[in-house]
Length: 247
Image 1: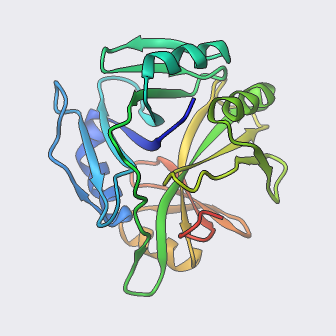
Image 2 (image 1 turned 90 degrees about the horizontal axis):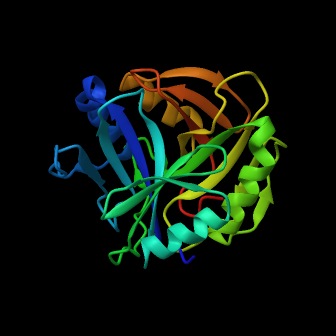
């Protein structure tokens, strides 16, 4: 399938929705659209340039998380292709379809409505440059190889090794504002794939300090990235990558 655009969706429980949207709006340097949907459950984090690639959703049950929207010319035809590759359809909601990957990661197939312009990273007053630009699909080790093959085939993007064997990314499509990374989880934990978002920043240390001012906390530091938890404990990472290219 030809994926025309990718959107990262942050899914929040109802009792966290307002405060979480405020935090992530601030971190992204965006404004928030008016709510929409039958229950006013959706909103867009509007960038100051380009087309949106971040949206938020209030969920009725469960802990929330992260999912991807794949914008395509024909969602129903694309759903058939995804099923042939190992996905299954969880919900058909008319305007869009909700699917799960072989490892259980949730994604939606939606109509492409012309999005094509990547937003520019934000330059903050301390000269840090950052952007939320990647979704990491976190996969139990026993399911990793199958999941990696699925996403490579679904997107048509070749895989790229990184400096860490447990991290494999799909080659970045320069048309899209969101990249996809897959992380193999070797320790005991969830039995299906989950996800988190990554920021690219030219100074991880300064970006971390800015996030701490908004109520986030450091979970663990590595050479090229820092694992964070937002004010309600949702994990995400600040990574040392080029905010303009994602590399």
